[in-house]
Every structure is written in structure tokens, then in C-alpha cells.
Length: 89
Image (cartoon, rainbow, N blue to C red):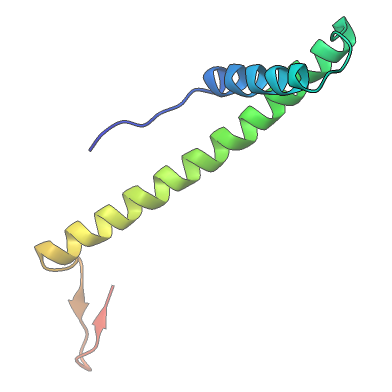
């Protein structure tokens, strides 16, 4: 299994650079200190949100892989039959 971990810092710099590039293409005046600070703050928030999304997706993938591995091996080990013949977990 390969590691696909992306840090918040890397995401933040990617988002910040992309935003600044997009704004430069828009024939707007040069960004002031306030604008740069605002872009940085928003990039930080977006990076945190995306990091959370990526983490959740990674967990889901691991869960599915684990489920498939268990299914291939023959099911769960801790299943028991009670007196009525029903399988309980």
C-alpha cells in the first residue's frame, strides 16, 4: 500500500500560489499587504478543510481494503453461534 499523505502546509502553499496567479491574470491592481494577508488566511482555512477531506477519503479506502481482505480470507474470526443457530458478531 502506498503512502499518499499531503501536509496542510503543502496544500496551503499550493492554494495560495494558485489564488495569487489567478488574481494576476485578472488585470487588477497589484495586491497590497492586506490582500496578501487575506489570501494567506483563506488559503490556510481551505488547506485545513481539504486535509480533513483527504484524511477521511484515505480512511474509507483503508476500511474497504480491510473489508475485502477479510472477505478473501474467509470472514471474521470472532463470529460465534448461539443456541438458536444464529451467527452473532
